[in-house]
Structures are given as structure tokens and as C-alpha cells.
Amino acid sequence: MSGELDLNALLRTVSATLADGLFVFATVPDGHVPDALAPRMMFREAEGVTLIVLQTEAEAAGLAYEFPCRMITLDVHSSLEAVGFIARIATELAMRGMGVNPVAGFYHDHLFVPDGRENDALRVIEKIATDAAKCAN
Image 1 (cartoon, rainbow, N blue to C red):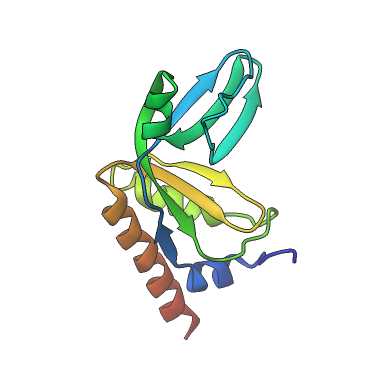
Image 2 (cartoon, rainbow, N blue to C red; image 1 turned 120 degrees about the vertical axis):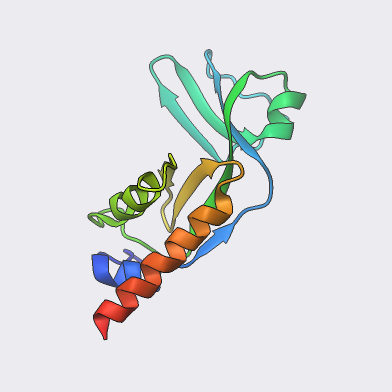
């Protein structure tokens, strides 16, 4: 399963699902992830391990965190080699004053958007798909 490479096909068929919960970004400098955490993402950087976890988990573990956000999953199997897909979505969100932290998984891309802006982001994604479908006809 290599995923979709064609940008127009990705844009036409994208839909989005909002995950439950409020997520945050935290770091553990020594790389030790507390057992009570179930990170959605872990990424090792020179300064430590970045975690994306539920805010409630970070607080329970006593971790400092930043960027309370909501996770939106793009429900299209995009290839890891697809060109321009996330750039297009991020550009549309930026034009509406919204930052986004995208994370690529093997099957899907996930967008972490500021808490309170998730419905705006979902509408933008829907409009992108609608506009791309109109252009294809």
C-alpha cells in the first residue's frame, strides 16, 4: 500500500476526522517517557524527545507542555512521497491566520491545530475538497 501520489486526487478525496481530546506538545530531555503516557507521536531531537500527548496525561505526569491543540486526521491514504498536499492545506489555514503542526503517519497525515480553531480547519479542508472536485468536472 504505497498511498496516493496525485495531488489533485488527494485534494478531491480528502475528508477529515476530529479526534477526541485536547493534545499538547511536551518534551522529556533524557528520553525517558513515563509509563503512564500514551503518546500519539514521539520524535527524538538533539535536545530531547518531543511528545504529543493528551493534556490530561501530561498534567498527570507533571510534564510542562505547550500548544493546547486538537488533532485532525486527513482520511485519505497519502503517499509519504506526495508533493504539495500538506503545503496546500497549511497555506489555506495560514491565509486564515491559523498555524498548524502537521505530522505524517504511514497511512495518514494528521494536523494539530490550535484549540478552538478545529471547526474552522475542518471547514477549510471541506472547501479544499469541494473546490478540487469542481475543477475535476
